Image 1 (cartoon, rainbow over the protein chains, first blue to last red):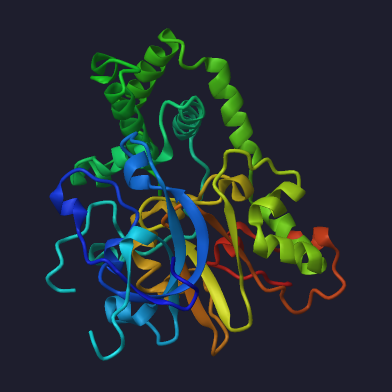
Image 2 (cartoon, one colour; image 1 turned 120 degrees about the vertical axis):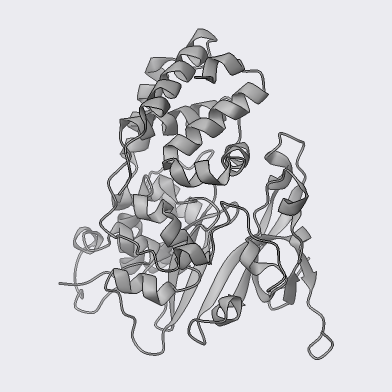
Length: 98
Length: 98
Length: 194
């Protein structure tokens, strides 16, 4: 579980390059750091539901990102809030260690 | 993320090809009769446990890119619902082949 | 603008529905009932929720903490619907809702999503150029207000609780609800007293 305020890194993974899949983590966030705003409960994994497979509940988080960091444009201070499943998140390496 | 593989067709967040496409706030008519019928059909088959929303999305995401962009919103839905229900044996492929 | 469906799509739909009927999966009556039910939901429901939140602090708390319960408290059936999340604007943060992957939308309280919400342009640009998108509605935010784009990627459906505009002091709920438009509930526009 990630507590609110935890800095997390979205996995830099591209399952869509490996064949049929259904994922809810937008491409534009892969590999980026965000801050857990709050947990949103747990929901059956859509990656399994999409293929009619048994789907275990996975914790879901609202994660906040700095908007300008995403595309190298936009206004400083603007942010983005996105629902991301726990298996797509890792704790971000400590600042300076990345 | 310069060396990232390209996003899937439906994964449109930040897509450069639409960067200069205007959004038209007046383009807000409700769905036409065709759209409402497809929409209703989806809700009915979902309620009957024949197909989940994640399966609907997976079916839409499986459309070839040129079809994805050429088809209207509910035209995509219709092709996805038909493909998923064929896959599950609810209808036959010949029922939905031109 | 939304193009009409092709003749091929119309024929496909009728063939498909005929096959479903023949197998006892759906009836014409079920389809008609479902369309009528879906047509009953519209942005006036979300507008009434916002107006009540503006005048009733206890309801506002409920709305922000549990949008689903707050919708049900207004008589909306949320059974089987995804949970409703409510994004409360402040004088420092303005929320804008998009679904970049498909078209997730709080249909129980706003009705069918408008065509622009489902357009590739909106889905692509809202996360990259949110202020440019807002400008297409003529929406400019006061200096110092942060734009917080909410990309609706998973199990919640999100609605914005906008700030009550100045000049509405003493208005009753019905009058307040009338200025809360669908676009304000998505965050592309702001409610105006005029």
